[in-house]
Image (tube, rainbow, N blue to C red; front, side, top):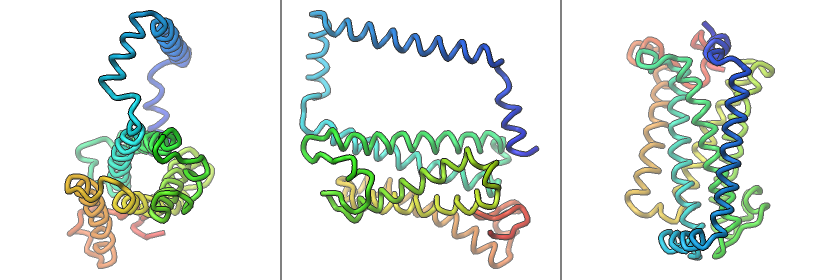
Length: 256
């Protein structure tokens, strides 16, 4: 069964009218929660609660947004790594005995979107920082950052490539499988850019824990990909597993 056909089958569980009703109901709940939260914040109890939260989380600290952007960057990088592992699992099938391949593909797509959401938070918060504020152009255009412009620019390029690869999920039927796989090669370049950005632009990267979580997943991922390519080049398929294919190989075992 193809991924496209299985996708349609797996998403046909809930009838369309019920999905629409649930979506509208959830939206109304969120709006009501925001409305009553705004009303509560105007009351004396709400103002007291606001002061307590300000004391607890140091919301008026000049370093608050710097902490948020660092935390979101760490989460985004780990999600991007996990997305890369799931992408290799889709092409190589090495998780097929543990997980359904359709689930792996859908989960890979979801984690990719989630990583982009955290990268967007990582970038947007920089414009709110009061210590070293960024303009919108400094967050979008490479190599013009006031802080370590080269390595921040490498991160901007890596994010742009990751965003391009993720968009192709929704254009696969139009651009064809071959172009889809070719564009997916850029995911490795994007991940490399994110790794270099984290190592050389991250303020916490010199510390051993942060250096470990940035470099260890990267070395493991590129070792996995490189070993698959070496086994393919040598023709030693048995040593890599019957179904192993490096990222970008067609079902025939021929690289693009």
